[in-house]
Length: 217
Image (cartoon, rainbow, N blue to C red; front, side):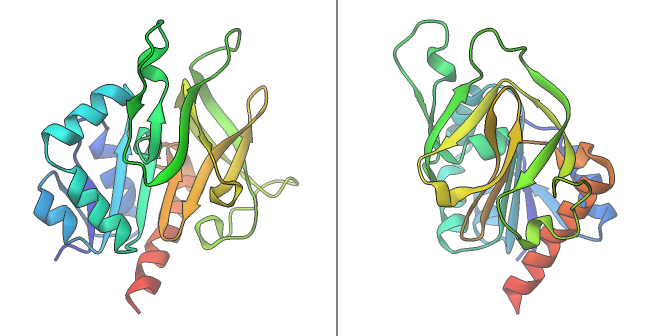
């Protein structure tokens, strides 16, 4: 059984996240094999690009069931950027140009993925402050400012809107406060890219590694 699997959904810069994970002494493998993913001890699910395209690739690769097995088993799971958005019920990305349909996600966390309001500069690109809602091991030793948060690198045009407040782990201001980190049991998601966020991002990945180790104990 692989201890940590980085999922290859064909929608992510796998090299960057793999190198960052290795740098903090994690030992990941990259795989799109459903059996390997289902039997993993922990998962990182990175993603960039279109929600609808990524959702179709997950279905085509027969990964939906494997992802749900990891999540329902309570194994540590970290979704990054689009990988976090795909954990939600649905996205309005498909209907932004006037259609009525909404693309369904994995439905692991109830809520929607929404586009930033008209008139706001999109995509939201660059460094921004993530403020944890409360102390949590994922953000341990990351209080780098007077506002008790840390700066991470973002690039996205859509944001998640959880139905339940209890699932919000961190928020970021970009015209208004939006959810930039989520938690449900051992399921985590971050809108930013830790693999592109320097020391803070590496610390967060190391913290995720500690969560993995503590889950095994």
